[in-house]
Image 1: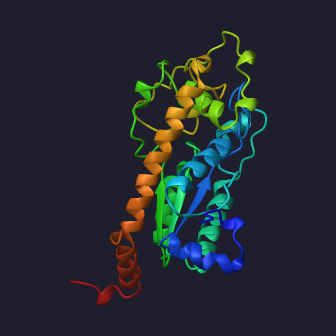
Image 2: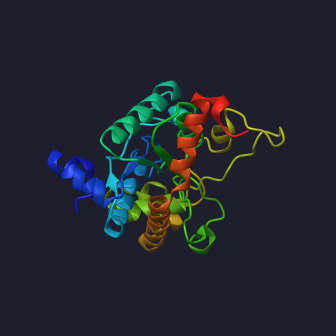
Length: 267
């Protein structure tokens, strides 16, 4: 079964919809700086590798990776392509609506960019608010990954363009990784603002002004393969659970009905 939406002809889509149990996946990535040693499209390249692994194990309809995202922090470095949240969220919503219009009852947002907080946390709430007639799920970056990063990595710090992400790119696009540009340069985290347990607009940029973390030199293809395989395993397990899920669709239907008629709901 051809799982990639764009590789199907119009007459093939119904068969894909049936084979996938009406589950469609929209991978979300970004274009932003990943240090001097990794390509700007690292998230896209790793997302594509992840999708290959997923469809090899489970039949789901997969949309093309959405490359443009919310990367406001990365605008302080060359190469970022940032889409403001008031444009991005309606765009993703419109794509989800079109997926449903084509007969899919469950839409899964596959987050492949850790900075997409708005699309992970806010998007599902927005879909409830707007009373969508389909179920929406958002799989966070590395959600349900069945391996601890500390068991794979040798660096104390990781999180972006680090040993972990560099290892992943050594698997997804090794020809674009330039470790020789680093020499002995590392990227220790800077001191956080001493303001207590609060969020600020510059938490990331103040702590990681170079858009890289830790010791990327410790990356290896072997580590990358283990991470990518574990990530795919976690996503596949989640997708299988989503296929079996009956609670979310029913709860959304109940919510929509009772919002439309609050007096007609249970006492």
